[in-house]
Length: 54
Image (tube, rainbow, N blue to C red):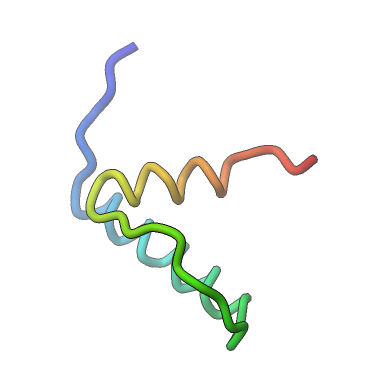
């Protein structure tokens, strides 16, 4: 399986998904548990969004 590098479109899609999640959560207080940047963050968000609900 060949993996392609993320591009600007992938980043924009990840930012859009993050905005949807943030607005759905509202103003819920919480503590950050990690800090991720770039492709690592995009991969983490994608994994969370595509994980099957249990």
